[in-house]
Length: 326
Image 1 (cartoon, one colour):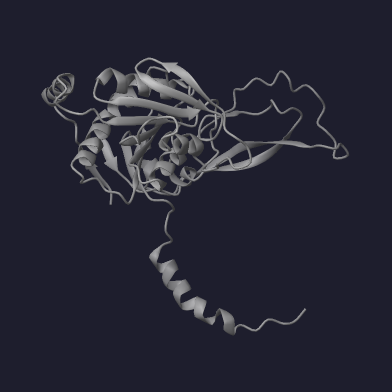
Image 2 (cartoon, rainbow, N blue to C red):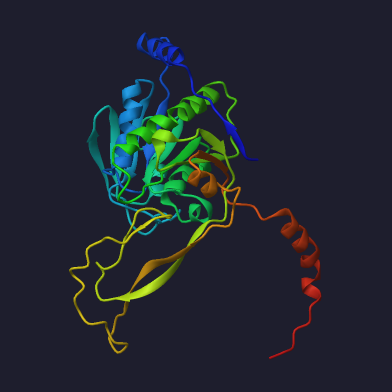
């Protein structure tokens, strides 16, 4: 399944597209942007800036009003959502008090925007989303929700490395993925785009020297997480993504003694205890090699064929099992 491909249009092609749209001879497609880092996050703002500056699209934004990293595909049922219009140059934007999935859902509902966008792009996330961490990712969920609603979508993440990466890298990441976005929209216009999956894209930290696009599969990489007893809700690192934990958060508020077990409430925070990367041909491995990984995803990962075959033979005999009475 793994392959290298390139679909970078020539500068002349880009200029022709822009001239046609400026002359009104071609309808601009609509792209809606969401994320899980919040509507003020530099990744989203950089993506919107690049989309708007291209003059190729009508740009909409519908994103959480604050950080919602690692909330996966959670949705809001028991409370009403608060929605507020936000000023973002060149785009029509709303901040939503809910999750990434909520934001995508209400953005597609025609309650905020007059029509359904042609494409949803969720990102750019601060931190990669590969392997099993795709399950935790709110960024991926923003794209998956669009897929559930029959709208083509892409989740987009940048492998942020603390101490090395810079905010300007989000602009470079967005520009590096523009050929993919424009190519998808061309396929949508021609009614040839695949409807049974959506794409998860990860951009390497050294985006300026990336090795091109690489079609990959979801691997099995995962960070082993544990729990640490703390004395304040402010203690612990901030989750940059489902693949990265920033442990540099200030702990000035955490000066109390460790709470004893007799206290009414015990406080615990997640902590990273190591990484497990055992997929040499998976998305995370190729990302570390410097490729922009492009991974087709569906709603849920299906079980392996040999596992399905096992249960095919196992299930008919379930009712024949005899259990001792208690």
